[in-house]
Length: 288
Image 1 (tube, rainbow, N blue to C red):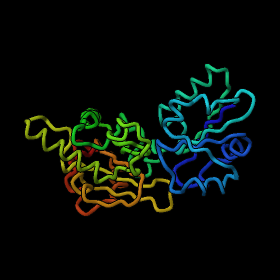
Image 2: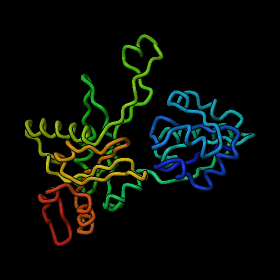
Image 3: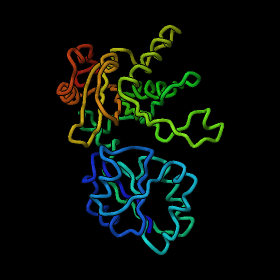
């Protein structure tokens, strides 16, 4: 049996009882180590679970899945994922490989950023398509995430922006030379994401395009959701560009049409004057 076990968002204790039973009963336990991170390291998880963990990087999961699935038809193998197992499409591929190999599988769910983000005060059913904001480079500056945010806001929907994670990445030079030398891990912050959006807004304004959001659009920055030191800050996009939310992981929410209850909740974490530009569009809707 292949067990896909969600670990939740905080620390080692966030695993479910059912998930912990699967871990302790498996012959091998893999820890997926590239789509997200917990606030504690591998050693803390091993001590809590009472099991040795095998780190599974992107190469192993996407190119060496046969190694993970080896003998899973006759013994139990656990694959641990921060958040919920299906928070990344990579894990759907692992399930399909298991099914094609005749290996049964079981999913043990847990909290993920996709539902925990509701703690900021925005109602989950008012969210549109989730987007990813990636680190720009000197030669690669995609803007597709902005267009999706604009589309969501036009439909009155908030946007959850998942921010880039660079783990075990190689420089172009080392990649071309075949050197197994990796760059230090990098985790995009809310202010970095806000800076990139502000650049896009300025450029498109200069081109005369109708904007999907502005510097005064109300946004929410969240960091380390599920941990004891989680942080939530509500501000304009411009304000969040100068906010420090501390250690990773960060996510950014771009608001659209707001219910009065959502506005009241946002006030709990709002920076000074963050909500002063809200406009009332009807008796029960605000927007920025």
